[in-house]
Length: 385
Image 1: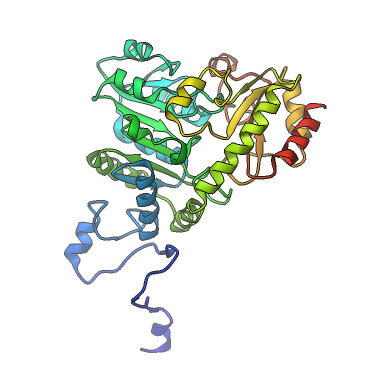
Image 2: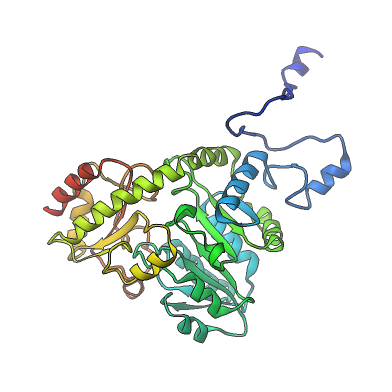
């Protein structure tokens, strides 16, 4: 080969041993000697790797790892958490269908459901998420999806997954956003869920350096049909994002334990502070979901909210912190704070905020893995402003 050709054709060496970390397959496509294998790989998710929008070895390693953690048969990684939610809902709903959704949800999910109502004619009924009879009463002939969050953002409401899933029966797809719990605290498929979604940006990635999502399926046929839609939608992730998430997964168990330990310290101290009206952490005995959470979760999570007197107090608090950072997202090693009414739930009007248990004084805290006393010192000084 001439130099012009040689510099283009660098070959991957064959291995006789296994790498300790998952290799990064940063490639857009794969070449073939067999045309039939090439064609077959473009038609199904478990065929040969052809094009990284359809599948990639690094992405598949992430999908297999999360499917195993959640107890699912297969998983579909996406470029963001909202990508996973969109892929699942758009692949399994059509105009005229009906969704039953928990009232207290992430603002982006609520905005998507509103868009499905207004633009695509998908009816949505909102329920409290604790009463199976309310869910049963909401059923319609064209109910296709029950949508829940394991631990609601930001109120800490914990859905009674087994009871609510049983209320809709086997013909309704039960979709659960498990981001706030992670598979370490809850595995919704074990409690009757059909599909579990995550923003892997949060605890699974865990280092505030990657954006991604994943949907895990109990039924392989549902996975395959959703995969076909997802690759057309174009929400599949970049291999490097998947590689970063795999790296984060390795410390998930260590981080989740420290996150929750710190959250318990801060939630109890906040509950005793005179400037705080109420703390929405399900680990507290007074929280409405404490009994449900204690029954089937393996912990209470580490992202929670609390209410100050009014919006002005809330704004002063979040801008008065020094160590705790005012920033979006959650689940990273650092502690973050935000004001939901202004940010994560900005799409909602006042009535919708109230229905979701959010006031102008509501603060969401995503507790990191720093020293709890250092965090409390910063929080306490900001409360005094």
